[in-house]
Amino acid sequence: MRVVILGVKGGVGKSTIGLLLAKELCERGKRVLFVDRDQMGYASWIAGIKGKGLIASIVDEQRSDYFTEIGVGKGRLTVLKFYGDGFRLKKDLEVINLDQRRRELFARLYGEVLRLGHDVVILDNKSSTFPWSEEISLELMTYLKMFPGTPSFRIFITDPFIFNIENTISFARRLNDKKTGGSLPMKVIEQIMLINMVPFTKLEEIRNLTVGRDLFASVKLIPYFDQLFEFTGSVDKLPRLQEIKDIADEIERVSYRSS
Image (cartoon, rainbow, N blue to C red):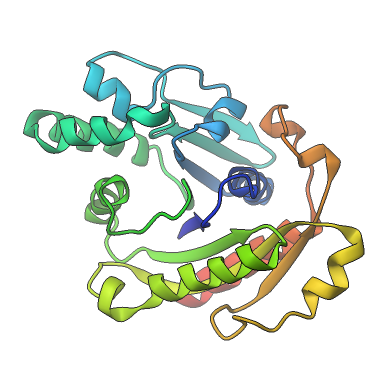
């Protein structure tokens, strides 16, 4: 199962939610691969990866510790810093796409990480990421070549501001448009929207919103928690939230149905 974390705005907690979900699945005995495709590399930093990511290492032709393995609960978490080196991403992609030797090296090195084994891969993304964009297709096509037909579970994350919720819904509609995404080799079997950092005083109001509900199997709310805002601890210090447990339950149900 590929769990794809998506959103239109930075700072809404995509990476934190991805890590919370990764930890929850590991606690259940899963082997989780977390692919950090966010330019800022927040999740990689939390996991203790301080050097260059996979793409930057290939471009600079330098050895780097771009992934780490962490025992969590009954399972294992592998975090791969895919990008995460700031605004050099576009230039790095140009270098790789123009150099067959580097593309082959990328396929080999990414393949080595994939062969470590995983039950679920969680893909953290920068804002407004489309699967047909350069920075995504490089990873996507390499993964699906090794694991064709792998189903995807999309999680759209937004903050509780109505403007951002509406933009997230518009983003989801565009991704679901068969004219743009229908030809891609993806098997999206479910998608949900997660409204994060909802003030306790606004929970009922946000819960009663009906806009966009036709798009998602479920719409989940996560209240604002001080301990998660700008979290700087280690993965094992992340709390287990009931809302994240519910998402993990849904992923396991969908995975069982698709197998």
